[in-house]
Length: 125
Image (cartoon, rainbow, N blue to C red; front, side, top):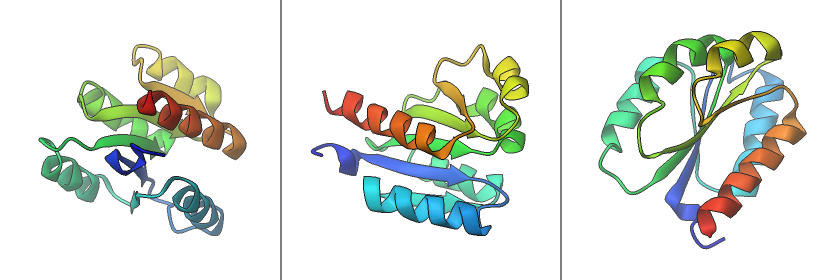
């Protein structure tokens, strides 16, 4: 993929170190390349500040609990392509995320992979 190096796949989740998330993160990195993980908002916000004027784009996977607070703050940033709220409480998170066009709620890992692949394909065109 030509522009894949222009995209950084990031995952922000307080439980990023649990076994299922570790495996999923490793699979994402193998499939899509440049990946970063964060377990707290402050480190993620520092990262966002460092790349603010950068041409790199971000696809963010975020837990529902963090996403509910963070999405309204970062949604309008031009370097954010997509935000995926990865959580089992679909209905709840779909309600608060309705007004944010870059934000999608996913509960299944295969759905997450598919949507991220679609983002990469769209960005390449």
